[in-house]
Amino acid sequence: TAMKKEALLRGLLGVPLGIALGHIISLLASLGLAGGEFSPCVPSLVQAMGSEVAAVALQTGLSGLLGAAFGAGSVVWSLDHWSLVKQTGVYFLIGSLAMLPIAYLAHWMEHSLRGILGYFLIYLAIFAGIWAIQYLTWRRRIGKLNQKLE
Image 1: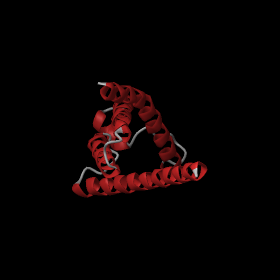
Image 2: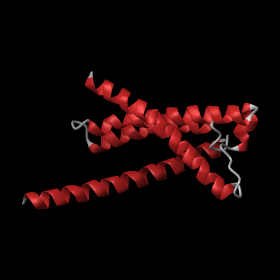
Image 3: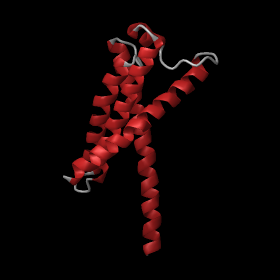
Image 4: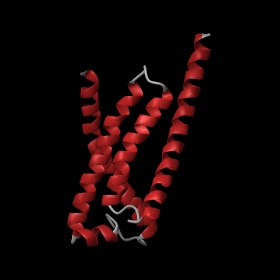
């Protein structure tokens, strides 16, 4: 169907975006945490993978997969027959099912119950913040359009 094709296209476009975002996050983290030395991934991932090249390759693949999941999942926002609550819930579920295992595999979180719960809470807070900003932005735009129509 058209929706499946759109999800595939968005997923494919999400791969390079996920990789780019992953690289930017590594760069920003290096600026703040590594004292000016570039660290393409966390040391525990390098240790687990046996080399920095293997760790970076895995992290790059995982970042691309994460971008693909969020990209493909974004089709839920075009399902006008769904309520905003349903769209948000499904997108959050898709994002969570991608983000949490990938973050665990990439060693972006502590490998403990506390680390997983903490990471989930951070993910939830970021998701809610971005959602609120987008909601308020669209609400304001729609209000301006309605004023022009009156």
